[in-house]
Structures are given as structure tokens and as C-alpha cells.
Image (cartoon, rainbow, N blue to C red):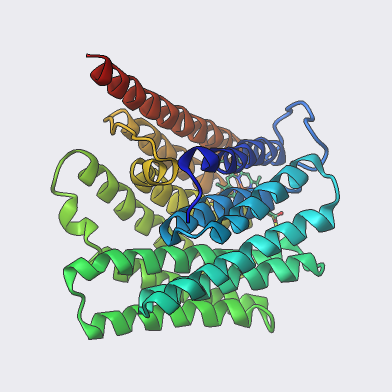
Length: 364
Ligand code: HEM
């Protein structure tokens, strides 16, 4: 038995509130003088983004796919963890809730694997384990700059696995599957190696990222579908742009190694989280939101507005980071946050437009 679409709404809402609050904290961290909503928002920007927003949305999507009620305990835990991370109440409990969410996601993949074994599910399972290990390190006192590589491993493998799953349609050869698995193993070896020597570890992770980006760029179905029109092309454009940012992030890691704060750290993290991950989110949103919420969403060409803005302002920010120019970095970062608000607005309007169209159809 699954959770009814209406009952999934509060879970999605908790994830979205975490996103908005994380954005606020991120802009404050750039140095913009915003009013203090809660003292902890700037410090909790990263955990809110990764654990409470992405963790909740990914957990929700997977729980819907599994169709079992217990699967929703994960997004419930991360959603509640987000509320605590926003308010600053009981930090250890907030961390424990995020740990629980990641454990539930790993168990969810075990359930998928018991139903049917597939390499792409194994990759996503290892991704969930990476998130769990990162969260456990965070819970036991490690700094975010040490655990963020485990969080990156989580998202990298989740997407690599999902793209391989969809690639089944292209009948990818065993050799190519092997290449992807080798790239994923390289990336994860890098993540594990950060425990011994963070600089060497992130460079290996960077090499794995470049390999995954190149593999996806060459083998993803998006290369074909980008020649189509409408939503299909929109999704493909986002995927291909995301792979370019993933390669950029990998190259930065290879070139510079580990940084624990400051401009290069900002560039590495946000080429990945904004350039790669948000490209994936922008591309998949018109498919995932309807599947999760049970409400349709009309694709509209205005969606390209938030896509174009994301790439322009992220480029400005990263160039600012790498040339040590604070103004482009701050302005680009602020406009990155506003771009994500445009995305949320476009999404809400598209769901509403579909709702109105369906209602009129029924009335007529
Ligand atoms: C869109 C606007 C965003 C802004 C303005 C922003 C801003 C920042 C800033 C200023 C930092 C500190 C970098 C440093 O140490 O110098 C940071 C760190 C970080 N950001 Fe963002 N960010 C944004 C989006 C995101 C997104 C979408 C994610 C993830 C999905 C993310 C995840 C992180 C993480 C994990 C850290 C490391 C936190 C830490 O070390 O405490 N950010 N961000």
C-alpha cells in the first residue's frame, strides 16, 4: 500500500521549505545583509540543501516507485530534520533524523534489489550508503568539508544509476556498462580515500566525475532526444548541460585538490550542486512532480528562462571565484538563488495551469 498523493504533499512541502531556507542561508553566507530569520541558517545551508531538500525529494520519489507505506518514513524523517535544522532546535536530533532518512533510502534500494537485481540499482544503493556514511560522520562530529564528498558521492551515483536505468532502452553493450561501473568505482574509491588523505581522495573523485560525465555525454539517450521538440528536447538540453558542469567540477577537483572553505571550495561545490544537480532537477521536474504529487504539470517553453539564467549566473559566480573577484561571485550567487525562486514559481504556475485546464475540461 502506498501513501495517497494528497498525503505526500506535506512531505514535499517540508522539502521545499528547506530549499527556500537553505537559499536564504546561502545568500547570507555570501555576505549579503539579509535580516536574521534564525541564527543557524547560514551554517546549516549545506545540510538543509543536501539532507533536508534533496534527501526528501529523492526519498519521496523512490518511495512512490516502491509503492510501500514504510518507504515514506525516510522522507518524513529528513523533512522533520529540516524543520529542526531551520529552527536550530536540538541539533543532534536533527542530524539523527537525517541519518535515519538515509538509512531508510538504503533499505528501500535493498527492497528494489530483492524484487529484481540490476546493476543500476546497485549503483543507486551504493549512492545511498555513501549518503548514510557521510551523515554518520557528520553526526559523530566531522566537519562538513570532510563529509561533503560523501554527499556528493550519493547524488553522483543516484543520477548515474538513474541514467543507466533509462539507458536500458538503448541496449547499452556490456563493455559500455563496464566502463560506467569502472568510472563509478573510481569516484567512490576517491570518496573513501578522503578518510586517509583528503587531497588525494578528491582528486581521484574528480577523475571519476570526469569519466562519468564523458560516459554520460557519449552514451545518454539525451544525445538523440535533444533533436526532438517540446518537453523531450527540454529534458535533453538540461541533461547535456548538467554533464558539462559535472566535467567542470571534476576538472577543478583534479586541478586544485581539496579546499576547506573560500572561493575554490565555492566553485567546486556549486558547479556540482547547482550546475549538475539543478540541471537534473530542472530537466526531471516536469516528470517527477506529477508522478510524486499525482497532479499534472503543463510543460511550457518559459521553463527555458530559469535554465538560461542558471547557466549565465553560475558562470559569472564561478569565474568570480576562480579570478578572486568578489563582486561577480556575490552577484552571481545572489542571482543563482533568485533563479531557483523563478524555477519554483514556474513549477507552481505550471501545476496550477494544468489544474485549471482539467477543471475547465470537466466543467465543459
Ligand atoms: C543558489 C544559491 C546558493 C548560494 C547563494 C550558495 C552559497 C553558498 C556559500 C557562500 C557557501 C560557502 C562557501 C565557502 O565556504 O566559501 C556554500 C557552501 C555550500 N553549499 Fe551552497 N549556495 C547555493 C546553492 C547551493 C545548492 C543548490 C546546494 C546543494 C544542493 C548547495 C550546497 C552547499 C554545501 C553542501 C556547502 C558546504 C557547506 C559548508 O561547508 O558548511 N548550495 N554555499
